[in-house]
Length: 330
Image 1 (cartoon, rainbow, N blue to C red):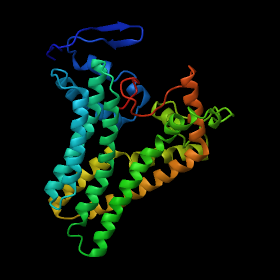
Image 2 (image 1 turned 180 degrees about the horizontal axis):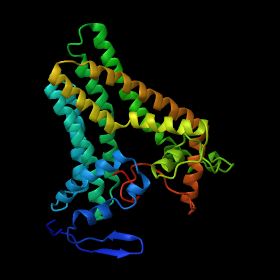
Image 3 (image 1 turned 135 degrees about the vertical axis):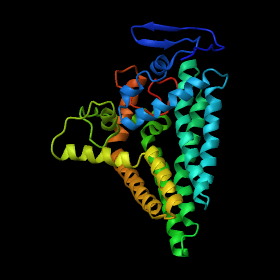
């Protein structure tokens, strides 16, 4: 790979902890991947997660030759999320396909902004906020867009309302599920810090519930949770549901369904996808509420309190603490 120069001072040092960036020339892809993805793929070993990052790193490599900042990339992703959602909502299959493809580009750039920030050691709370704005638009937009696309020429007012309703339900459920994933962090910051009496008095169990946030993160790190019988089945069902409800899978299936519609004129596959994914998102949302009430809220509050006091609890989230956390999504 050619090596360009970056208009920033500094150097990349190698130490006991691996590569740390204090900046200078543009590295090759392998070195850039080690810098930007340090620790990330160890924290999340899902094959599709790694696959997206294997593609996005090449976009990162191109952009570090420019003066484009991480926040500018993030702002672009917000625009792409909105534009893709609106195009997806169009009646013509070709235009909707362009919208789904735009959302694919959004999803790739959503990983690039964080890579740029880590390479340039650029910390930005505004960038984290814009990241969240883009996620909200894209997550709601893929369902609202698909529902609106199918509502055009649905054949009857009843079918039109069903498509719009399924799109609305899927959008609300996906956004609410994301909110409930972060609920323990919000509760700790907004309430426990100002009213310490809310902190649970009993220590968290050493073995997390198979549906808990900690169990999910252990599974993604490849550690797993020792379980037998029903517990193992629950863990496998959990992973299957999370895979089926993953945003990137929804995008790829939508793109495939639209390609099929363009080739055959049939919207049957897209209709099945919309209703099935809306149901999955409702299931995930309800499960999150139940597991938050029964385990996550208290367990995560205790873990966060230990971290705040300099404890040894392993950080597992939130998913978008940009730059400060090398395991950040952004």
